[in-house]
Length: 127
Picture (cartoon, rainbow, N blue to C red):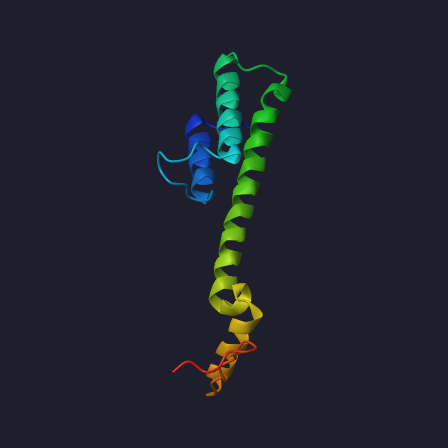
């Protein structure tokens, strides 16, 4: 396996950050996931910069970097798929996040009916 270029790793890091949920700027500290990603990429870049540039017959020293990048790319694909899945669920199943009462009311309206108003015990209609 070839060692990934720094620009590839940087692009992968930025893509992963784009998939994380947005956070308010300057209001909250970085999330633990963001911190972990940052630390992993910083430690990987520190290790790759400290490695000698001469090629050796032992390719096991470069294998973990390529494997980590491949795992990060797979995780990125997973995050993109999760985001698109959530978008599709919200688009085609709009009542998924509603409570039962609201769902019944909207279902009745869909077929042209209005539900009667419910009153609590001891209450009358407000006029």
